[in-house]
Length: 471
Ligand code: BGC
Image (cartoon, rainbow, N blue to C red):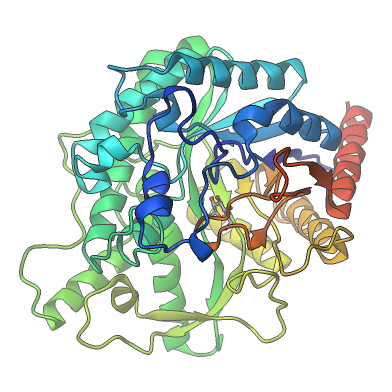
């Protein structure tokens, strides 16, 4: 039986980890969004304290050890390290904090996978234009180099950016995530473009300056649904599915793994829609300049965040409206047989992951794949005996094992999302993804394993003994 490594998703600084202004930390766009964003976060909740991992790291470590994780994915807060976003001012206490976290993990035999950017741009950089500004690529590169230089002797798995799709679309098209920009059909493409440019620069920096002495790997975490035609016999549904995948997975994976540019169908759909709408200010999907570091080949592995699946048909159109939705012209629907768990977008489809893994294998030249996020949420009354989530983890890990064993997909690892209940972005605390329950009503934020946490620990221990037996 092949063995994959099993990790857990960190809540650590991901989804904000408390201490929002502690010890010289600068504000991030999520701090601003919560405090001033027109109350777009559920019930005006904020990420100021959340699970308070800033003060309770040792508690998190205890949970990590209790699960027996082999790997732990955590994100750095840029503005905790560099309060204004640049290395002119380094927050020494922030630095000490992350050094301790990384050292504690290693001392516990847990390998860290570190994400440099998870939605929370320093506000100071947003004030200079944020990701819409072309300057951001160089600024991100300089932050990335600082992190490689500082932590790279110990960190061997790096993610530059988490889910650029979400930053671009939810943050700059829909305006429902920080920084709350609503410029449909324009800003998201620009933001995605600058994020890709920033990623490419950071990867090249690592490659030239650090790879030989540090020996790590660097990638970008791409989120995607699995998508298949609503009616498999319909050419229109099939074409719509191709567009659906091109505008999510392909947008960020095609440049890195296939051509160095966006998928052709994405470019042509945008051009066609621009013409129809009489948009004349040049292409809305920017072009990569030949004078810049190339994107092709700038991922040492495929980092995939998978949550759900959709059946797809042509969009019902937003005639006359500029926007990503009308460019994509594809609509995903939930199959009535799929249970929806907790949050409304999360239809539970474990075998969608297996199909997506096959698609990634075939489309992106059989890369090594880490599933960097996957999980199941609860909403409503807390259920500590969360049998559905237990079933979900058993099923999904089976699907991963099948992809590995029967389909020959090169899966290297699986990270359950998430270690703790936390601040679930615009949904505040109403949605709980944790393997550990966190009582947000108490100052000590006690962490208690759900039944799914205990069972996940059991799965890990089983895989660990298989590894030992195989060796
Ligand atoms: C994000 C996580 C989040 C998860 C569930 C992903 O988009 O990276 O921070 O908790 O989705 O919504």
